[in-house]
Amino acid sequence: MGESNYVVVLEAPIIVRDVETAEDAINVAVSKVAKALNKEKLDFVRVEIGYSQCPVCGAHFESAFVIGNIGLVGIYLTIKVYNAQSIEHAERIAKAVVGKALKKVPLKVFEIKELAEGDRGEGIDI
Image (cartoon, rainbow, N blue to C red; front, side, top):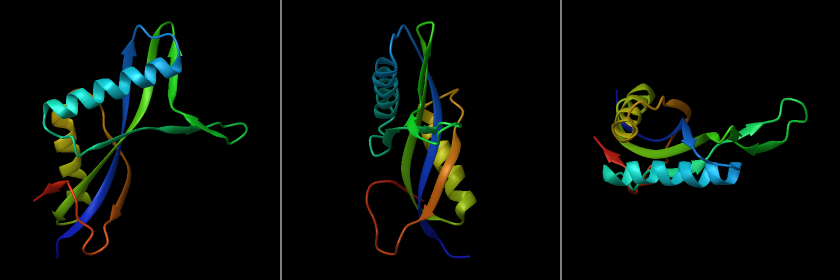
């Protein structure tokens, strides 16, 4: 079995406290995640706000909810994994690397795509 390169997008729920609006929750959550990633020298992991879909109208909106000054923000974390043996191997690598920085945060795979040949950049090389 050959080795391939992948882009892995993980989804993470981030809880933040003492926020009043969804925008505040997003800002605090992104800052919290970026700080944790930078501490582990994982500044190549891209951090983005997740999106949810309204079950009634189908419109997409940022995944940030605030109830009683506690916010829940859905974050997407994108990482490139090089020389993985399979999609499953790339998933395990991405979860292990990001999980090292975001301890106790459940990570779920949102999407995995194989990179085109020659498409390199910062990421995890095995």
